Amino acid sequence: MIPGSFEYHSPGTLIEAASLLRRHGDEAKILSGGQSLIPLLKLRLATPGHLVDINQVPGLAYLQEADGNLRIGALAREADLEDSDLIRSRYPILSDTSRAIADPLVRNLATVCGNLAHADPANDHPATMLALEAEATAVGPGGERHLPLVSFFTGPFTTALQADEILTEVRVPAPPPRSGGAYLKFERKVGDFATAAVAVQLTLGPDGTCDRIGIGLTNVGPVPIKARNAEAWLRGKPLEERTCKEAARLAAEESQPVSDFRGPAEYKRDLVRILTARALRKALERIAGG
Ligand SMILES: Cc1cc2nc3c(=O)[nH]c(=O)nc-3n(C[C@H](O)[C@H](O)[C@H](O)COP(=O)(O)OP(=O)(O)OC[C@H]3O[C@@H](n4cnc5c(N)ncnc54)[C@H](O)[C@@H]3O)c2cc1C
Image 1: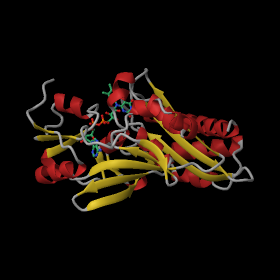
Image 2 (image 1 turned 120 degrees about the horizontal axis):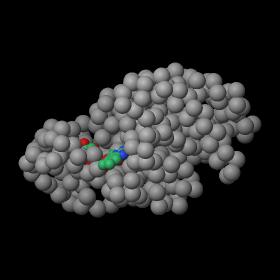
Image 3 (image 1 turned 90 degrees about the vertical axis):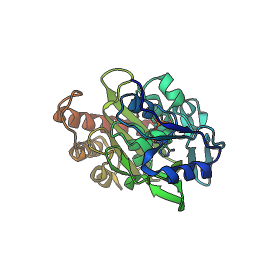
Image 4 (image 1 turned 30 degrees about the vertical axis):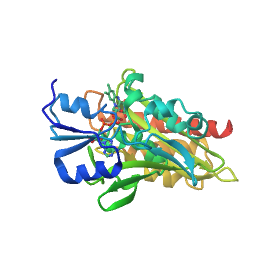
């Protein structure tokens, strides 16, 4: 439980942080909330020679709507989302997601950007960000890059970020009128990672049919899964019980769970079916409730 030795850096600017990453390459790791990295260090599953702590970089702890997007800065914590009226009223799917993560102690420190950068297939934000069609901003020696979350997760614990890039912001498109979303997670006990979870973000057209739909699945594959067949099936259709049931069946078909200590693969696949149907219903209820 004692980490290997490392050199600790506490840069005061993003430029300084980026140049430390460039100088130390694969030997360096960013430290944000530390809620995934510190346990890995203690178990010696990660032994970086340099830790670049970005907590002293000013101006990264924001959560604001601007230019048609919700912008979540690199140091916005789960607890910030949980406490935010903006998130509760405009982005209930994000409120659901943050509240489903671990416990208040973890949520006080863990960042949304860290959750995405860590890319654990069991983490909760990736599926939600897939449903929301969010985009990440990365800053590195080559300047700024914008990475759609749909192509961000390249494997378990692996992302499209370069070793010398910092994930500085996630942008979520502001929901148009008649939108609603929900994140439903099934866990063995409070604070556990998901056995399976489903994120749904829905926008209805003026005639009540499905205009936009995003469906993301947690912990039922090597990476978070965007349930594209279920989405395609729903587009343009009225959200009737029968339509939603078929979408849920398609989402389950798209999941790729494996049997493990959280349950057999078939059980998890069926959880995806049930959670998708429920999340669609909840999204519709939220639209109806304004
Ligand atoms: C007891 C416990 C229970 C948990 N349960 C859940 C759960 O149910 N659901 C869930 O989703 N998560 C869970 N977590 C994980 C926790 O939510 C993650 O630690 C957190 O989301 C990661 O963010 P962080 O800021 O703590 O990142 P850190 O731990 O600081 O970093 C994690 C990784 O991401 C990299 N990184 C961090 N920030 C950036 C950045 N801005 N740019 C580039 N790379 C970066 C780091 O270098 C490191 O490799 C749990 C953690 C604990 C300790």
